[in-house]
Length: 267
Length: 267
Image 1: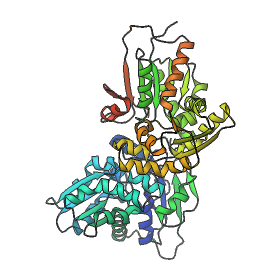
Image 2 (image 1 turned 60 degrees about the vertical axis):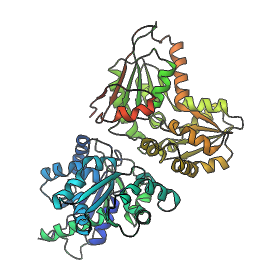
Image 3 (image 1 turned 90 degrees about the horizontal axis):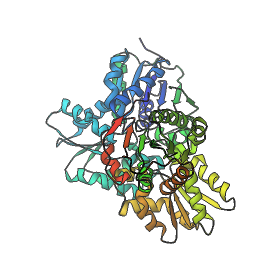
């Protein structure tokens, strides 16, 4: 039974739009409802209990839109809240960590995988755990890169400054001879070219956003939840803080125009 | 009537410890209760309504400690919530913006004042408004510097990288011939030397934290609220997210040891 209901996408803020972008590229016929918890962004440095509490409130709001599947497009929320949400909900729930981990394991030849992410995602240990479940012999080296998010939000993704920051964060990983680097934060795909230049062409970069869209496609296919062809699609964007500016900044993340952005009250 | 009750200091997170530091340097005999809303930090990009709601919840918690005066040690909260808090409370309430503005007006000879702060503080327009109230003929040039906070939190306050970031943010202000630069975010005092090197020795730097401590001293003196000499003092540190790490990172901001940090629930 095909299903016309939208796909729910939840993020702590604006970064999850890179995941939304990958999803609409892979599934242009699907409707989406994106919710960014912009009033409480970033989740990166918050505790697990706090992240779970916030995630539940956001997802409750998304469920009111009758979403047929949920993508947790925030690495920190995937790290801390995915199991709680999967337990709460009867629909398929996909995080961004397991797909990225699966892709890294498939790509790596030497079994030395680097993961860059926010402090919260690194502290959670979820990437090493997910990779370890799939390939216990592989070695995972993690590094938090707190300046990458504001760099991307400034639009400083090319040039001397981002390269210097990337070098400060990544040179140890290169020295440690990784052959695969996972972009474990939804902002980082916008720095992909700078990161590739700094680590060199021999290190494969895995974009969790792309991997997550792949997994979602498979899940919807298997469960026969894809939308019937030809039906009109809707894209809804919700935020928990003032919506001004979200569409203009979000355009760079989403790789296309964002229409009206609506404020929702979660308090 | 001297008063032994503590001074309440409220911040969105850890940065207000630079203000707490200035206060205990000027008033070593006073007790303080510091509350950092670390679960919801940063306030910088949040809307006025959200900041006011969060500030009220934090201050309600501080009032349970019978504070005799309140310092709003967060620029964003001072910009958006100070008037609401002054309206709510019967005790003296000091923000960080008016003292910094007053000092800048006293220091500037050419009447061209630069202000650097978070996006939220800049968007609030509160520094230009406060300076305009005191000296309408002065010109105020504002610049948001979102990378400064993570730079400070990384401990990257000296060297090529912070200088490059500082140059990216400050060169236009220097070209615009300011003679005074207000550090309008509580994290920025830790970058003071780098900032001074980038803008050159002829631009006077105003540290809002120091100016705020000055104003608090005057207020307590005038109201006869200073603590009787010789009484033992207490320093209490409260946070809304997990307290791990706050004391070790906070030490750099506070300029000294922080004892036990307690979690408080505001939800």
